[in-house]
Each structure stands twice: as C-alpha cells, then as structure tokens.
Image (cartoon, helix red, strand yellow):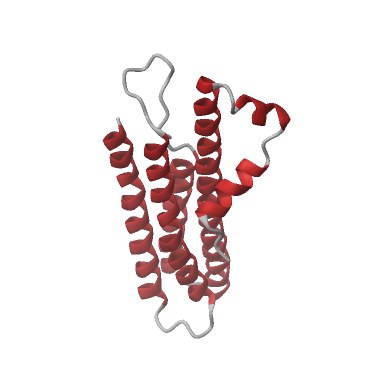
Length: 175
C-alpha cells in the first residue's frame, strides 16, 4: 500500500511538540520549521525508495542462488551486473541533494519549490512499484524467458535512474 503525500505531511505536522507549535508564531522561525519538515518528508520518501530498491536486489540475489544451483552461470553474470547497478542507485537515492538554501544565500527556495521537489520524488514511487513487481515475476516458476525478463528489469532500472537524475533539473529550476 502506498501512502499519500498529504498524509505524510500531516503526520509530520502532527508530531510537532509544544515548543514547535509556539515557534510557529515566530515569523522567521515558521519558515525554518516548515523547510525542516519538508526536508524530513523528502528524506522519508527517498528512504522508502531505497528500501524498495533493496527488495529488488534481494529478489535478484534469490534468483542468482537458484541459477547457481542449476549451473546457469551466464545468467548469474547478468544478475550480478544488475545487483551492482542497484547498489549504486541505492546510494544515489539515499544521498541525493535536496533543494534547501542557506539564510544568507542569494537563491531563495520557497515552500512551493520544496513541494514541487517532494511531488517529483513521490511520482518516482509508481515507477518503483513496477520495477519491484517485475523483479518478483523473475522468481515465479511461470517466468517464460529469464534472459528477456532480466533485460526488462535492467531497462526499468535504467529508466528509473534517468528519472531520478532529472530530479536535479527540478532543483535547478528552483534555483
């Protein structure tokens, strides 16, 4: 089940303690608090994406073990190559930049700009769900052509990575 972005923001706002609620009344601190909460929301979304990528990697690892038992070493090379791509993508997702600006920065990033970045990250979840489903299908006994399935998953990984790389353009539009 995929949570909804507004629900995530409401949950973060609901966790505000007494001091944060008082601080919302202070004009300059309110913006700081909201930016921090948006950063936390984006961090949660990216952590969720990374967990999904780890699930894909786990499925590929199970498939690799099955192929090792069968002695199909050519497929194992392809699977290991995909696993390495996923490992790099996990790090890219976990440590991605977030559109923040310093107090004395000339480029000011508004709450709307941060929301646009959050929404972009949120849209990446749907493509991630398709990727996870395809990786799970590789494990099913009804998988017709394993090499074709692996190529399909590799294409989905490449598509997800290029979409994730487009995230920088969203940040640059903001700045």
